[in-house]
Image (cartoon, rainbow, N blue to C red; front, side, top):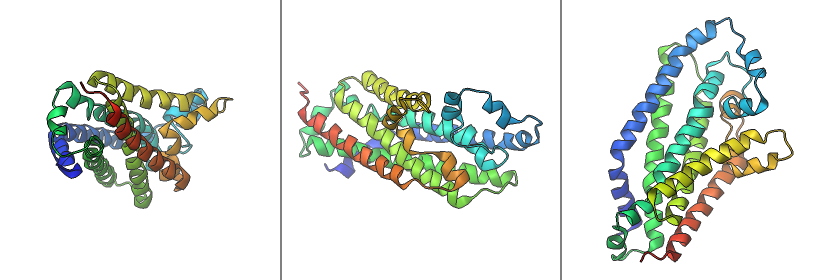
Length: 267
């Protein structure tokens, strides 16, 4: 049994849940886009309204967006900044929390490891199983946004949208790596999943609450620091340094997960 065999088997087990997530996410995107025409016709000055909120709130739920009249700016605030970064990111961290710990909980890990496969290959195979899952969710939301924009006769910058989903996919993979490490470290699924969500959600808040404070450097611990949907979709600016950090963090976390599981006593 090799990494790809493990990945294929694990992905097949998760197909039903993946379909449900895609349906919910596409429905969310559809409803969000459907509201945009009435949003644009409103007499409310949303920019002025948001300025009345604390900077921490703006950092968490608005990001760098200042123009809400365009579909791109609206989508960043209503879809990508919160749903994508926090909810979808937490989901993948949560799902990855059961990759290794689930096998230990079910006491099926020993049946796998008696075959000619090392613990490192086992962990890598589990990680690889989540990559097509990330791709499916990413492409599902991309298609929903493109189709939704067409249905309301609104133009959207396709190149920038592709950039958001490309970098957003790397962010989700990094969230998977967070869950994988938690899964390799903890012996119980609930602990691993709780720790994974806690890290993603906690660092999201940390990044938001420390903006423009003496502790802003702590926000560097959050994966959201390296992905700004507003800069990508509205301004069209790509943070290559942030992309490099996401890739490096993912690699380090996967290596750590493999090393932790290699040293674990499963008796």
